[in-house]
Structure formats: C-alpha cells, structure tokens
Length: 223
Image (tube, rainbow, N blue to C red):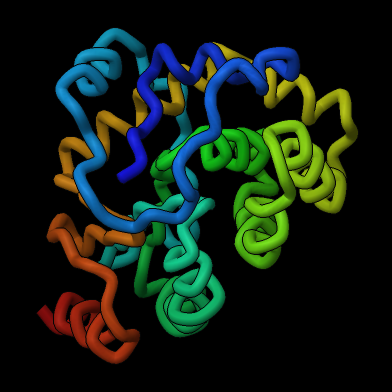
C-alpha cells in the first residue's frame, strides 16, 4: 500500500530542484486501503485550510449534492471520469438536479503535482482535469519526476498557461502543504478509504455501476 503524503513531505518535493530528493513512490493508482494515519491527521490540524476552494459544477441550489473523492493517478478514477461521470454531468449536473463537488486524494507526489497544475487557474480546473485523466496512462509512465513534471506542464500549456505560471504554481510550497492538509481533513471527516468514493447528500457511497449509482441519485430526488 502506498504511504500517503504528510504535510511535511509535501514541502520537500515542490521545488524543481527537490524533485529527486525522495525515493521513488509506490506504483501509482492504488485505489483502496487506509488513507489517513494519526500523524497525518495531526499535521493537517496545524494548517489553515480555509483558503482552498471547493471545485464544483452545477446549480448551488440543486436538490442533490454529490462529492467525489478521486486521485489523478488512480486508473479507476480515470475510468469513472471517462464513463459514468459523463452521464452524471449530462443527465443531472447540466439539468440542475445535482451539485457536483470534486475533491482530490493524494496517493503520491505525482497526484499532488497534477492537482497543483489543475488548480493553477481555477476557472480552468475541470477542463484541465479532463486532460489529465485522458492522458493519465502517458504522463504517469513518462519516467522520473522531471519527466512527469514536463508532461504535466504540457497539459497546462494545452490549457493556455505559460511556463512561468506553471512553474510558480508547482513551486508554491505553502499551497502544497495546505492542499495536503485540506485533503486529510475532509477524507478523515467522511471516512474515505479508497478512490473513487462519493458522498451523496451526506451519505457515503462506494464506486459502483452507473445504473446502481443513478438509482441512488433518483431515490434522493424522489425523497
């Protein structure tokens, strides 16, 4: 099982010069197992997470709120994004029935870096997330840390950002620390143990076939 990033670890890996300072992480994409350790939770409590914006789609007053917990390095999350999420968006989010909130989970430093690129310009977050998942198999296997950063920056440039902007986002150690603490805070509160996982109107829902997930949403709409 991959040991998730603590806040302290996040600080050590942001600067370009520090990419090589840690040993290679475990294989990215593990989708289950405990996500929060006691030490991690203690770290999270020392950081003010109020500056981290929720990334959301849909009507703020929609009758159903769906929160997704996902990791950019999780292959199951990429599959969900390319399949069921499209149906969720067209049938429920775009029609005003569901408010959708996306929260990142960090299995490894690469997922954190991808998140920092996605959040570099918040208005582009969901478009960049789409690009990150579409090319996941390419960038997570690009090579070492420097090669993976180069691939993530390519995605950022496709979204219209320049290298100076991307470098500034990737080297923002305070943002990295805060993101990790923010993730830990929410994942602990919601009892998240794998990705993708969901909270539907306050109730935890595991990943499941679209027909079953749709039935859960429809029951909330009918309730």
